[in-house]
Structure formats: C-alpha cells, structure tokens
Amino acid sequence: MSNINIDRKLRRKRRVSSNIKGTGDRPRISIFRSSKYIYAQAIDDTTKKTLLSFSNSDLKKEKDFKKGKKTDDSKEIGIGLAKKLIEKKILSGVFDRGSYAYNGRVKSLAEGLREGGLKI
Image 1 (tube, rainbow, N blue to C red):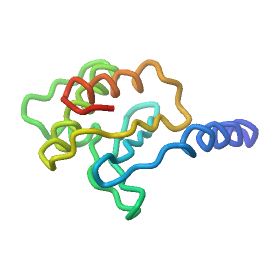
Image 2 (image 1 turned 90 degrees about the vertical axis):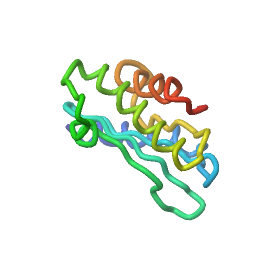
Image 3 (image 1 turned 60 degrees about the vertical axis):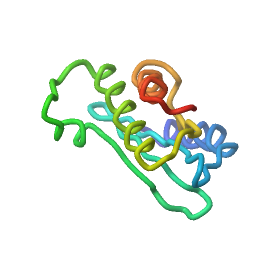
Image 4 (image 1 turned 180 degrees about the horizontal axis):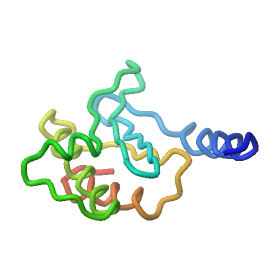
C-alpha cells in the first residue's frame, strides 16, 4: 500500500473514531479486518483498557466450528462477543467501524452483535 493510501485510511479512521467514546457500561467495539481474518474487541476508553476480544482464532476453538464464508464467520464472531459481554453484564456498546465501510464483513459482525443480544 502506498503512503497516499495509508494517509487516506488514517484520515478516514480519525474522522469516524474521533466522535466515539466507550465507557465501562457501554464500551467501544472496535474492529480490525485483514484479508483473511477479522478481530473485534470491547474497549473502555475512560480507563484505556480492553475488556474483551474475540476473533477467528477464538471461533476455531469452539467444538462445533465449521469454516464457512468470511461473512458467516464474521457474524459468528459478533454473536460470540455479544455472549461474552452479556456474561459480564454489559448490555450495550458503541460500534466503531474504524476506516472500513459498513458493508460485507463489517456489517455482518454488527448484525451478529445485535443478534447476540447486544444493543448497539
């Protein structure tokens, strides 16, 4: 990736993420998408700590795991993170898509969070 594209990506991320702040009751759910995997984590910005994270590697550890399409795996990651957050009695969050467009795997992960019972 050239420097121009990296600068554009960073500007887009700053524009989207600058208005989003997470708290202990309502953490920021930040995502990272690579060409192969997707990662999601719940962050408390007031204490600057990561509360929970969930990714493809956590998904593979489950016993009933079947590799499917990347969008299907993203939805499962969203459901898994939502279940973990609800176990910690966190019922809502703020979705931070970063520099990624809200379609495909990013949208699928957000739908999985909602399907898992989290209010975003």
